[in-house]
Image (tube, rainbow, N blue to C red; front, side, top):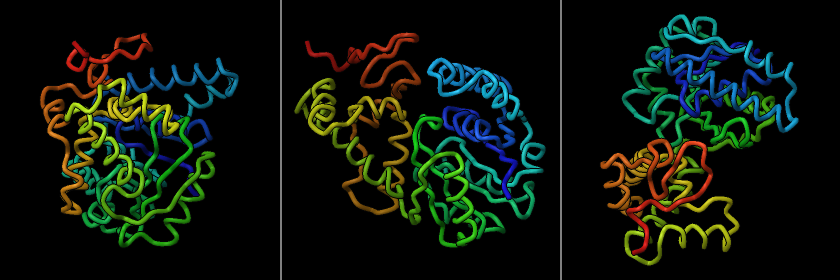
Length: 298
């Protein structure tokens, strides 16, 4: 029976995962090495709960209960000692994730399931640094977590049927739709999405059309709610680049090679919405979609 959830990382995905579990009655320990990051995460969760209350999808009482279900920790050992499930949502960096899972294997109860929210890194590779490969699994939530229904459940080479069934059922308890996939680079979501985003960037890079035009074609012609360049900004251009590198390295296929424009933008610190500029510029409090000066037509 899973009751106690520990979430590693309090960024966009981590706080969304903590919010969702807490909203559905689970006891959540949100863990980050940085107390100010945890404080910011709680502010974000509160703001998102207020939005749900304003829409009438949540009561004030439910909001209070959700917040009461979340405790914060800066010490990983203390934060996972009673966990039935740990969900790692740290930065998409292989070495960091392997270090975290070694620690989780040492500190979490022997029967605890260890899940990663990785969007592309091998679950089999992550499991190999633990002594519980049968209990390691991918639990890839979509952003924003409280809203998006999909959970990509990734079976590593050693992941047991019991672990997989437990996580599928748990995902359904969050009113999510879990989809089981096997452990290959990019899984399903990013193996299909990232080449599309990369191709959109190449289309801009080669001067076929501008930022606004490319996104408009995909929104109006293919019924996408958000164009691929805006979506890349929303995901984070550094994250897109990291995933494309995983695909390129994993398959050895040049079709996954990241566009030079994407590489340069990340090197320049233009990583999308989180830095205030990517293909578009972002101003706090504004929802206007404004093409970045770099890509405005003269």
